[in-house]
Image (tube, rainbow, N blue to C red; front, side, top):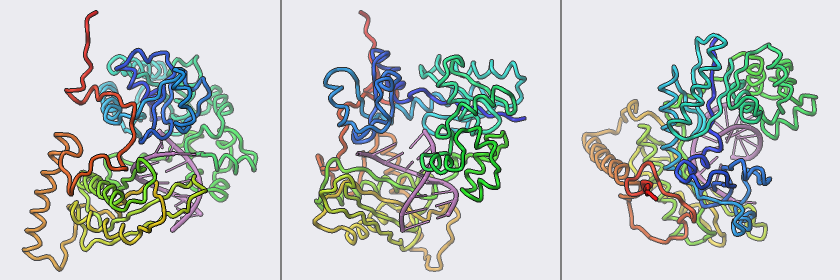
Length: 428
DNA sequence: TGGGCACCT
DNA sequence: AGGTGCC
């Protein structure tokens, strides 16, 4: 039987920060989302204070002022690099790694006898910590859903000491499923918990025992797959990480509510360019560009407006200029005065593989030459931005201090990816 | 009071 | 198109 492991980093963003700031060990530390909006990573100490995931930063600022907690802005360059390092270690010590998210990786776990299995899992657990400084938990099982469940147990139950391997159909597994709340099952969200409890399904075990056909009929095929996976029958494949995205979205809250058209246009242009970069990176072309705006839905005192509009491109393209042109048109058509916008963004839709693009009947040698020039210009821009840092070369006129610049008051250094931000060691 | 993806209905 | 779920 083939087995799969799930390696999940503990409080990942907080752990990354602690690697370079050991003084944060033992402290209540949280990391905030973009724009310092809400809490997205928590140390155990901050969890112990009863502060939930997703808490808005303003609700806990008083604890910061009292010195009881530390809140950091998110430093994705650091976390991305640390994630790659964790993955490298796992690759060295395993038969294959499939990244699932920035802090979780599935690992192939084939061909181990029972006693070697745990030992191997412990080795991964130990080596990642040793080489990267990041603490992880490991769950091993015949299916991804059970591996997630095992991982959760490894995190929650101290006796496992960070590693839990389960097999279907043994008493320990059964006990674990009975103890596991539905909301802790991968693929079961708040909504489903409510609906399932109405028909008497309250634990992971109940769902595993339910008739799959009934689950499919009353809920969905995805939940049926989850139920089967809980029984040890694999039916969830992972999206291949190398598959190109089907659409690309770039969006961000403005730093404050704004109705200034030129500021908004500047932000939308920024998103259009970022989107085009992502598009070129995965070697796709877009056939349509969608622009959206949003007012703040929590402000009942203000008029609400959340328009969006997709504009078709003349031909599939990855040229930032064409994408920006389309985005500009879309924006002009949806923008209305009299609203204070909170957020805006650009989606690139109907993506196709750049290599398999059908030659259009309208193509002429002239447009061929255009395309070559476009590709040269775009690849030079991408090269500069990737070597010298994002935003080195931009289209259009820069406007420093624009309202849409993000808030990030407690940003740490990019210790592992920028020479000028390397940590310094001092002898005392 | 985040951002970004996929899938289902 | 809108909702749900995941991280």
